[in-house]
Length: 216
Image (cartoon, rainbow, N blue to C red):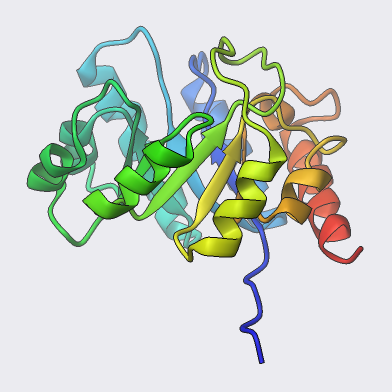
């Protein structure tokens, strides 16, 4: 009998700019109390390291209080300094070996693989704990340079057990086909933080759409 696949989970990414840190922490608390979130990636841009560490420590504490994995984007050194659970690196952020030397073997490493099965295999062989494919749809959060397709998720999930994340312009309206194709995690930012009804309702709507796709 084939093993049952684990349910697809939400992988939340912070906005690039957090103007009101105290309010953001409140919003994050409310999301975690209302919706099951697997992990949160700290992705702040255009601020100095000291501020990243300050904000990151507050977010980390909220994540850990709710058993949500805390991931730092791009920088293994900041992930180590923040005692993060993982670091997520892009193709231009150094090698997995370099990141592993910094964070050790008790933390995870995720790798952006764009639309490339080859990059994903290379990441897996180098010791990545998960790979991320995308962008799947146009995104207001990040410029779309690579276009992935659902077949990539289908093939990957069929031939390997290494978890995969689908990312890029994903909303409650379009996540279903990615879930059905085999994504282990659905990574979102704008669909939650910019949702007209508020972040909590945005997260609820996404998770509901994920579960609906799994049941069909």
